Length: 449
Image (cartoon, rainbow, N blue to C red):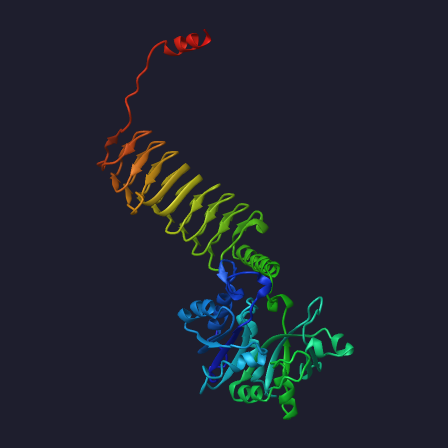
């Protein structure tokens, strides 16, 4: 999605706050929702809007935020002293020197604002009445200490005031300021330069640019959105609230797209989970990052899937774990208490019980018996096990990598395989059974004396 391509778009993301209520050594905006840092969600929404310039303003724990943002191509500006939101935005002026067009002002701890809402803000900036500032407002169930927006029915802003400075009548207003704004670059920097700090907190407030524009005879406008879209995170409890909101929306989307979730509230998605049609997901399934599920897959209860792909018709679980690099082929089975890591399981192959398959390539139609493991690690390096098409691996076998089992080969139950097995061969590697007739009876008789 792009907005008004004739007017370039820049985004300033404020992430300088200390986040002390999180009680964490990790910066607040880097705490994850759906296995992705909050800041990452916001950057993705901005990128889908087509922003050519993106700046993140850092302060406390600046090195952590910079380490995340710079590889994604963002400029980093530092707010050394925490003097308010207007002061924070001003720190981005140098990074955007010479940049024309529109500027979106966003907050790193308000991660779920959508690309569509950002687009509405920018579009409102270019309507016929040409507002100097567009503010995103919302009406929460409890107005708490949010700043208020006093606006006419058509959305023209008459006054904006912080809660600390608001009168009783102004606090009775239910339209609150999210802090998110859209402003033309040509207006933004001159207005910010005029913001003062003669208020109860002695800070430079960003909303003051609205009243400064009004003093110049310029109107500003508010558009509204759902309160949850602009919900911020200041504590672990609020983080959990937004996680629950994100998950609820993603579950609804999965079902709308043709997947069956038998107990939706127990299924957890990652931000990039791909799930096809006619997929059935049983209760208590967790998807980590990097998962692609094709059509007509069945995932039984208590399975955990991360960094893995599952082809159509496959059956996973219950209690299966697919780790990064697992590739499950069409109609393959990964059963209860089976773990795959960096393993390709061919079409129609089966590993149904109590098995670990790591660093392995398993051909189509192969059967892996219960209790089988690939011994892929010797304490220093990882090694590959290759099993050909149609092979049969007996229960409780240990395949010591590097090793290859040929197509159609059989490995007898309880074998420890340390050398390659040719096609259609039988491999047996276990101690010879010895039976001593009557020994058990004589043993019990001796113990009873």
